[in-house]
Amino acid sequence: MAFYQQQPFYNPRVPFSGPIQGGLQDGKSIIISGRVLPGANRFHVNLQCGSHAGADVALHFNPRYESMGYVVNNTYQNRNWGSEERKHESPFPQGQAFTLQILVAQDAYKISTNGRHFVDYRHRIPFTRVDTVAVEGMVELNSVAFQNPAPYFPPQPAFPGYMPPQACFQPQYAVPPGCGFPAYPSAPTYTVPYKTVINGGLQPGKNIVIHGVVNPNASRITFNLRYGSGIALHYNPRFDEKVVVRNTNQMENWGTEERFGDMPFQRGQPFQVTISCNPHHYNVFVNGNQAHTYKHRYTRLGDIDILEISGDLQLSLVQV
Image 1 (cartoon, rainbow, N blue to C red):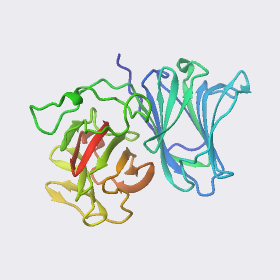
Image 2 (tube, one colour; image 1 turned 180 degrees about the horizontal axis):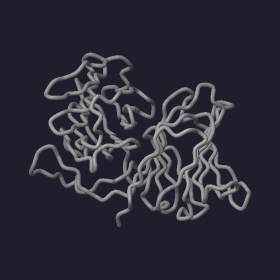
Image 3 (tube, rainbow, N blue to C red; image 1 turned 90 degrees about the vertical axis):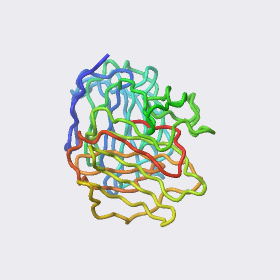
């Protein structure tokens, strides 16, 4: 079943309230990117049944920064709050950029923070009643975006004519450990070099999630976001130089390299990378922490429709 793809809200003011066109469906995601203000005490994201005062709230996601930081999840129904579900972890540091993804599943909301699964919140109100997303508190927003249940297109290996049997079944969404798929299988399930189509190209609010393991003797690995004959984002961890190089290739010419920032990858270690597309830049998160920001040099985002991964690594999950 196909659903209309709602356009994102760009740089909305906080407090923010906006409609979810068509409501929620199983497999639909809401992706919120922004920045927690320095010195923030709390903020919240609500999935609501209406935009009026006193509306029922199916999901109240509420990071709080007092006493070491924690997150409260709850439901507001018939003008009463239910029992709180608390997780004593602070996934979004004060003053830092963040990406929050809420995936609707039949039994629960699956909540990911900076590309890493954070918590499941079981439905107390049917998700079909939800029609509004609201954000309030000490944050600024880059975008509030919507991703409909995606049609399944098998990922293509980089070498035409060869399809490993494992590649015929890939989960569409990042699956947390313990939910039926190993986080890092003992054998790679993707061929490297790897290449796949980004259906519909990029748009603000789009996230690309990559899980894998760096080889113990790795020299370099590369993640490319391509358009036509160019590379919009070349993200190139170099273990021999202990640096991550970012660049763009247009008209067969490389631009100026960006080399500042930390080296968040380690030889022989698993990694989780999330490339979050924002209106003016990419945020790259590695293992749940923001590693780099890269301003768009090629701005026709819809043309960027190929992901390439190569180098000294094994892949266990790619979600585009």
